[in-house]
Image 1 (cartoon, rainbow, N blue to C red):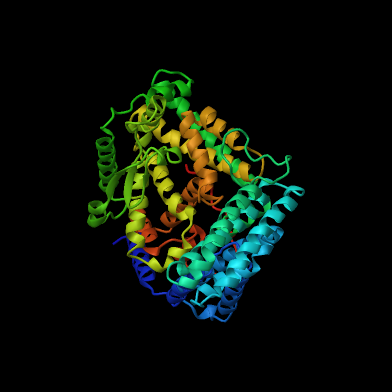
Image 2 (image 1 turned 45 degrees about the vertical axis):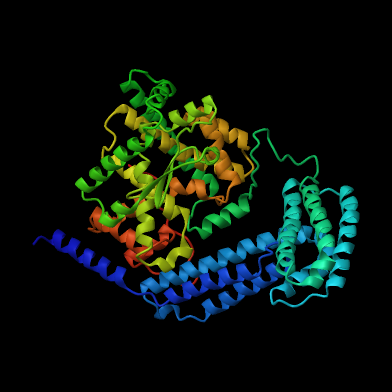
Length: 565
């Protein structure tokens, strides 16, 4: 047996043993997640002094608990979990402090509610309220709201973000009061008789007050640039902190530069494919040709199934990764509603693939944009992104291997893994026709644009409308699809770094793959091991696979290559 083969088998054995190790911190991670969930469930008024004070104690207690652990006595699996858990605590504490600072700037909008907060708190343990006094409290609060509204009219908030926070404080109070009221109403006759009308009145007052506060900001603060998309830039300092806590050792400026370099490569390759189709350097005309390859209404599910079967066969023929038979058996299909397509114009995936295609009641132009944007060549690189070996396999494997690492989930791992496969398949000549190449390049360019527009938006250098224009003019999106992509990026629950995580996470995986192959691993060994270790920032995965030194205060330092060739 050759030395290289012996080395490969040795790495495989080491990888298998390391993967099988049990981490002493597994239960501690589960305890943290359970504690966090329990406290969020109990202290459900997330915009209240009580909430912030309780969670400051929560994170401080966990920081003390982490400090008492014998780090040096842990296995490599345990050390990785320690760094991951400490980072999770640090991240939670950091963003709590950010939110608390914003809360303190506006908490006086609810100064009238001191006794109402007491009522809500005492309700948790079912204390019988003094119904008559409570009715008077609500009545007095209604009058106070009217007076406060007049006061706030003369001193608008400095910007719309602060006004939004003030409104959120009142909405949070209103929801808490509603829950407490419904607990007693109709069960306690005395409560019902006294409180029904005062509650009805204050509930209406709170609705109007929250709406007033939301719009009570300086006219110098621009909320809508005309796109109708309202996002909240977090600024350079928070971006840098967020990147550090995701173990990305690059600045926003460096990431934008990388995206621009990748963008240039995409454009060069698109022009090559355009020339193959006879459109010369007019890549936009070539993209128009590709968009019109859409399948007729009603045939999209079969087109998706054909693409899935083709990609799985391509991957299995090359023995790139283990695809469990049960994983191939248990994924499903859904159709996306027209309403959801407004923020997700392309199909989504995970446990199932959710197909985006026109429905009967959509406007004619919207139908065509949906069909053109979801043509088979655009879908060619993304079916495996959503299903196998992408998100569906991630869900399947993380439910069965180191599932306790769920709290360490990061889009750099989740989306980066799926994007990594697009890079790998491109390099293995997965696309055979110029139409297929343009389909893959369209999405690669889209990922680059996401880095640029999301970072520049949060740096205050681009507005939502400018982001839409970038996607239309430089990537080739249909306008409605570009608008939906930007809305999805800034008005949903996606965190600020989510959009850049696709490409940067993919490049991290690609760099790590090269390092492991240089050590004698096969591609399949690498891919299978990634799926066995669970969710985590990729720099920590690298430390795990290569048994690299770690310390209790480990910070990001892996300057991974940003090249994919």
